[in-house]
Length: 579
Image (cartoon, rainbow, N blue to C red; front, side, top):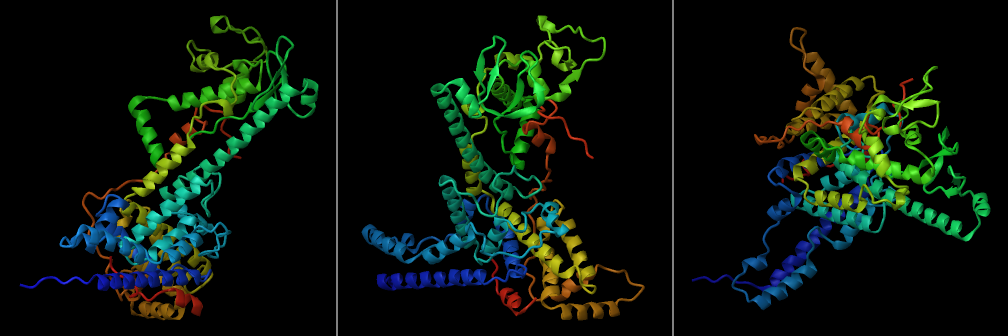
């Protein structure tokens, strides 16, 4: 009877050799990425790797599940004949010699380069004046110069689905570290609301940066308010006023300190006191990505609840009262919702108000909806207190919002992640290719056929079933840049063999058979239950929560008045593996 032989030293040596091999792999990737020519388009081999990841990722519900399914079981756990103590000792040694992604130092360098605030890593020369820069909006990708595009190329450079998942885990950990240290994500706008025309992942990165900006802004506003209060209590009103701290005179003649006032609201004056109306610093509304907008829409349609809008309105009223001592509801309406205030016509000086309320000015009147019995605005006004925005309970918790996003990124379905990375990298390649090929009389027509096909396909609900076709088209575009003479020769041969009586096919479709004939392993079948979600900006519900809906509107709508180096960067088509 044969007995399995186990040599502990041999096992540790093998593990060490494996670790060195992994380190060499990531060193190669890092070296290649650092040597990327700023004028070269992303290599098609990287795009194909992401395409394969889309297909393989459908088998798992989350990135955590993908890691668990692709991670091979440890040989230690399989050696049940070993003692527990020996297993623990070997496991400790194994941990010292191996790293999941490779050399820890190389992984650190890769992450450090990717998150470099200067943005020098994988910098591409993209002409900002090109109209094609809106391509990412047409196919719902990320902007060509964004952090997400660089992340797409880095992840697509790995040739193992497990390594892709491991790197993604590292990325999320780094995002969490940046947030905890109050550092921005590079290559993402610092203080912009989510662009609903971009992919969800990009929107979430925008929210993280915007939340950080809001937290910093709130701290500064709070410090400013506390300074005003301290100076007001220590100095006389005449001295304080000379330092730019504003007061308002109420009906009794008393001067009351304005709290949370931003700036004068045009030429508006308070109807009862004649004091200037100041626009208050208000709480900023929630930052809604497309998934949250959909959830909110469903909630409103199901329950009829508009609680979020009421909370924002009440908050604005309290901030307005704090900034404008002695104000009345009419003053607030004139600032917050001008369409609900109309000037009086001749002969309308006497206007009756419900509940014995009378306007203190003959210059105008509230709209009919504001005068109705039980009007929501009047009820909220009567319950509101003068409290500046920074002293109010926050309507939107930035820490909670970012924590929710980071949790979603940890649990994101693999196919969802890789699809967004794929489209973003595809977009960069086409934008850069257009700058190179649009001026070519011989190749521009072929390029624009390719671009039209990509846009039309990506706008369809089932575009992810056609990633192999998209890769073929991208290879054609790549060939136009790397080997234009060969492409032109093929075009000429194709045109000569096409008879006038045959039906004309797209030129790139015929060429795709030539340039994409080396390796076609992207064919796949799609699950029947594949989601066919239609993306929508859902602008009405977005506007509802940014304070511009008809019910809670703050302002009326405005009237509409290739080189050798490039060849080196593009890997051979056979230099990639099927996951």
